[in-house]
Amino acid sequence: MTVGHSAAADSYEAGLEATRAAVTGPEPRLLIVLAGIRHDAARLAEAVQAVAPGVPVIGCSTHGEISAGGPSDGTVVVTALGGSGFTVSTASAPEISGRQREAGAEVARCAAEVSDRQHRVLLLLTDGLARDQEAVVRGAYGVLGAGVPLFGGAAGDGWQMSGTFQLHGKETFTNGVVAACIGSDAPIAIGIDHGWRPTGEPMVVTQSGDGRVQELDEAPALDAYLERIGAPAEVREDQTALQHYVLSRPLGVQRRSGVEVRNMSTEVDLDGRTIGGGGELSLGTLAYAMEGDEESVLTASARACRSAIDQLGDLPPVGLLTFSCAACRAVLGDEGIAEEGARIAGEAKGIPFAGFYTYGEIARTKGINGFHNQTMVVLAFA
Image (cartoon, rainbow, N blue to C red; front, side):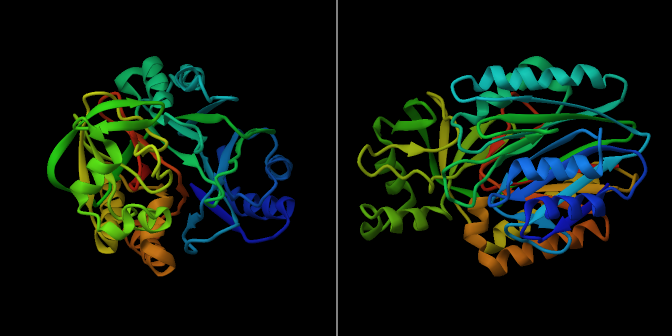
């Protein structure tokens, strides 16, 4: 695994520079392009193809890029995976809104072309503005079953909330999902950690739909949630103040594999008193008010890296993909994300790593679910 980075303002020049820096190892099998939303997706795709014609490419826009040089905005990071031990197949599905499950199933079928390797993972990059991201995960799971883990992230657009982009080869999308099934002779491992802890007793989702929760414990969901986290009166009716307050107080969703986290800050609904965003909370789900702080988030980022590396056993890692959440970035601030990068580097111990700040993280190793918010997910290759 090798990583290239460019801060060039011109999209074509940035794509050329980052790809040239990445394509230095033998036999590149896959290029992963992560870029700030200001970049022209089509020009990026042209540049990558100009440097590495014929090499499969997937990518997306970000809420910030992660690499060994530190966190950045508006740049281009290209990761190359290669060598004789890798096999890769890619796929894409456009216009996923309203058919998220079908789109997840469509792209997952590319895994059939990577059946010759002992270890496999499906890497998914989705439109972060599409609702019900879990449905994409369920669709992929329906095709692959429990034997192939899922990893990925939802594309961002720098909090503009107007449109993200995805890349697949020479094609670009604005409401799509792109995927790469990566097969390897050596182990592949996933680390997941969020650093948030439940407070109080769980609440039950008693009415939900379209990626939102209308009722918790048969009360208006926003009111029940604010009561459980002890929100002061001055933030309960002020959207800006409330968004800031709940950034460090997400909602936890009980799953068999543990508590997944949902960000409550991006779509505050003061009029309808509902909560939610990109993820689904189905009827009967147990949900917790969560709390944490900068240190708990930083500690979780390092733990996720260490977990992924430790799962490789005695084999040394050749690289890490590190996907963190835009909402965690908001909690940490500029100094905090610089420290997060330093902690990732401390766990990586000189091996390449790259990633981005997402609008939701995908990591499914157990059960059918695997969509997260405010979580660090790490993919380690041996």
